[in-house]
Length: 295
Image (cartoon, rainbow, N blue to C red; front, side, top):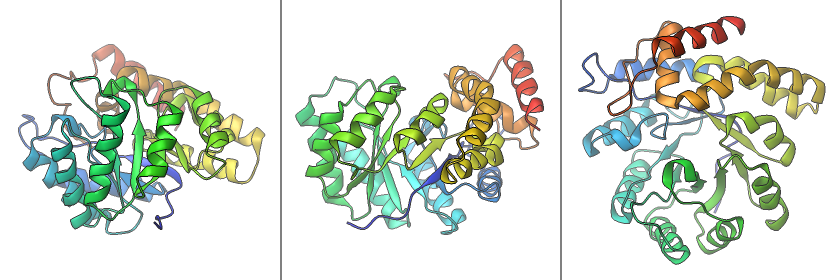
């Protein structure tokens, strides 16, 4: 299966809410997408952890998915996270995203019960059999409770034709090296752990999936360009300059930190949806200081 050229900085969108948190604020979502694209991201990824996809009703999920795809309007590829607790719901979301023009769907095997390897493979196969667009397999045990071994990832990659790329977010750089070696360099993989960005590119990652471009898109892009130019000194300098903010975003929680940061930089997008709290006052002060040092 031919895949779109997903590379570089893949920017994750938030899902803005109105002041009372009861509705999605689509105009604010549009402005946030434009900021990401104007900042130079190479793809847009709505409805992941940053986008609070797990906290939306089906109607809201559909609304955000359709709006995001239409607003991006093929300016860059769109990678829509379609993960859900059941295979049937994930298939429904994948079909919806494909029907509205998504270039890629991303699948995290989320489940209340611990899944066996056979169940995980069947989950991906059912989704793959239901759509014609490529699938980005997503491994993030911190949010899904499921940690797929490199061997299982490669098994799925070879068994499901639609699975053409892998996002690895365990924070273990050796997973990426192993994917590269055991996959014989034929498995495109993407870093999903902010503090590993430099090491991941050195290990052969094709891109970096991150919420950071909502706040520092130009710095993220400059790091990628330095990597492409094989300018290690410049890449190292750029990475360590932004690392304190990257660490803070990860440890503070993506929806809370990114929404607070967007507010600080002039875009009101509401608070995260409960049970997630907005960033506390002390955290906001720290985040403001980190942003100020990077301006």
